[in-house]
Length: 240
Ligand code: UDP
Image (cartoon, rainbow, N blue to C red):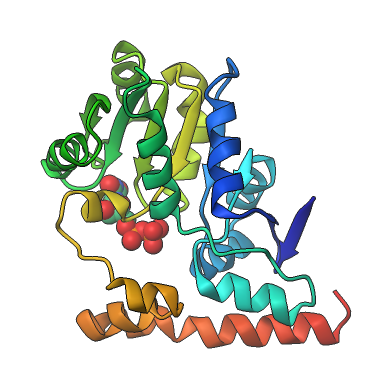
């Protein structure tokens, strides 16, 4: 059963359950979409019906940010766990390394996916990265062709939301892979361009605070978080 958090329905899963479900999708011969929305992305979905429709039909939707967890709690329908997209991706990589499953990396500035491939191959011995492509292209078709030619099973799509989910909805079938995960800025992290917060911050749900200290220009994006929680309280009061 899914849990509605301000218009986006989330799967109520732990990290292990999410990874199990994603792995099972690799065995089914059709394209699957996994989305990892944070509060900002939920708000975007509220303003973009096409994007909201894609999320509603996604095969797995996990709460990337602690803000979604707080909002669910305020709404009186708590979610089991925060499932950051990048951790879900890492968990999947450790489980597919050595199995022959083929990963394609799509997104970020030119050169970043190449570096991410080098780092991921080193971090997960036996991992097959079958192709890469940057995220700054005009038409989706040729990229879908490249993914198909690489015979990918799994694609990390890092174009930012909602672009990545729209690309997957439009091209997933033609690109021929079974599992597509929208992972936003994760490629920059895999490539070592952006650092993740130290584990202590992650455990306390304070990754956002660390990122804010590192990149003060993110403040404009972050003031939206309290507003998101206020919306949750409002929805609760209205009995939604
Ligand atoms: N990006 C891209 N193509 C685009 C726009 C963005 O590949 O047309 C990449 C960008 O380089 C960055 C990522 O998408 O690596 C977006 O990261 P952000 O953290 O802003 O995304 P979010 O997770 O917040 O959606």
